[in-house]
Length: 87
Image 1 (spheres, one colour):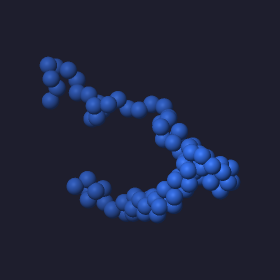
Image 2 (cartoon, one colour):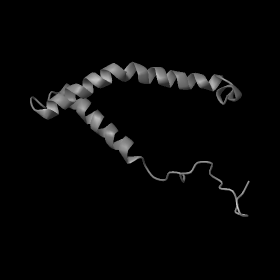
Image 3 (cartoon, helix red, strand yellow):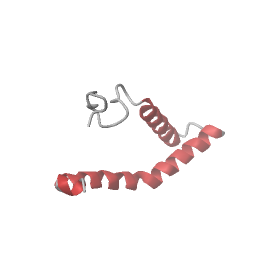
């Protein structure tokens, strides 16, 4: 019900729709990809960059199966009726 004769807001969320790229997502993706490639190219031999590359490699190695499982689960939702998902 509109308050004081105002029209209801067309967006159900309190935040306006997002416009433009997600810089945090793309920036972190670039950092992870570059660090992962540097690990295999053996560029950093010592220091914090080498430790960071090893940590990124270990982290990606531990979580890749979870990402694949999530992709499969979302793909499976295609076959579930929408009324069941919204319950």
